[in-house]
Image (cartoon, rainbow, N blue to C red):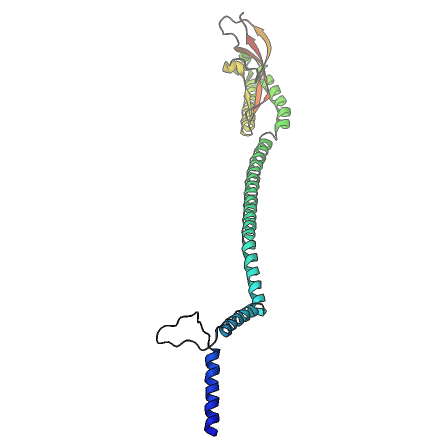
Length: 246
């Protein structure tokens, strides 16, 4: 009895296994390898379940992190060009500022040097012509001393008039020392008639004109008042007579 029940149960199990096997298998197995015992619907279901699980994983916190990373990368790629352009603009601005500052520096240096040169010239001019007013007043005394010497006739300067000769010599020595002292300070006297100069309106003042056959036109032949130069500048023009033959 027990043996019959065992045989019946085994036969029913075999029958159910043969009935559950599909009649057509779409997959071919290589020779020597047994076909999978798992039915096709169960394998497809498991594959869909695995894909769904991966999608679920992607939709979880990791997916948010990945999305944040992607957004950061996109933002970085978008920001980098703008930052480089901004840095380039800043560099160009700084270069322009450097050029402007250099130009201002060179201009200021040039202005300072010009100021130094101008100040030096002005100081030198002030030194050269500081005695101009004093020299104008002094030349009147020099003229009077010269007139006093010319008023003495040459024929009176003899041994008979020794006192007059001594006085005349003393006046001449005083005049020479005075003119040497004035020359050291840039004040010089000139006599156009003695030097035989041509008339120059810059340093001469023509008082009269007269013909002189033995002299050329425009020659100074008489000095009425001697002239003075202060450091190369005319302090007083000489009053002269000029030759005019025509």
